Length: 177
Figure (cartoon, one colour):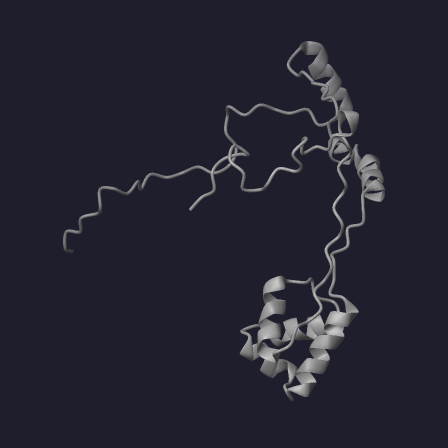
């Protein structure tokens, strides 16, 4: 029989799987648990708030109330006059929605949304459509800004000289160039 050498990195000793002599017995009955508590081998801890997830749901009523009180959360959509004007100009040029979309480098769904009145108005897309169709489209109107209240003595917020110009010196940091 040839002499076979075994690899030295292996542990070929036997391993016992099963009961060990140093194991602690855990009481399984209520009487055994009570006896272990009396003898001092078993202690219990009371955890406050355990098993509940109250912190995640405590302010749910307040959040729902805030949502009800908040302003309208709807996006501004395209006006019907704009959608009708796009549709009429496109059909006058004998273009399909897909042809117009490829000409302005947009998806056909964008043109469909603008014509159906569901799109959020984007001035860049509207100007692309205007250039391709060769007509001026009605732009969505801006909402009027809140008026400033008059200062003390009837002088407006801009002072005696009138409102400050946007590019006036000393009105903030210099413009980036």
